[in-house]
Length: 158
Image (cartoon, rainbow, N blue to C red):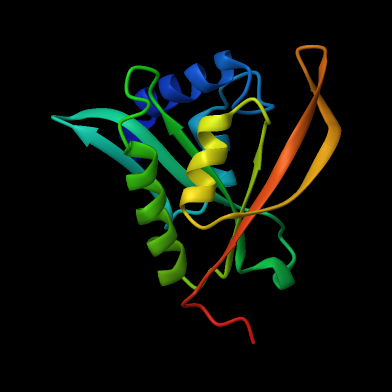
């Protein structure tokens, strides 16, 4: 993903926000704010003939050094391209990239309504570790968040 991809990436992000089951965010951040919040080495897009169909990125979970190998995953597919295996493609590549830079744990918080994301994470080796009930409000409604994580099989956790 390059900075020049942001207009299309942000459109796909806006689709996720509008769905009400992809994120607690309610507005698209500026590219500068988004850029500061995500790891530079782990930003991917999938495209066909120059059209970006989906994207994935990682953000650090904490600035504390003890969590330096842990990142949170974001995967968004354009509304017209869901169900085509693009999430799997992005996730495979994102996992590989994350391990190349030494990350040992990827985590994700998923709204229970987002069964497509739950299935994708399970398929990619993430395990369900718990549920945070009524953890936050979105558009005036309390939302639960399912927690998933994946430990690297190649980056040693000794």
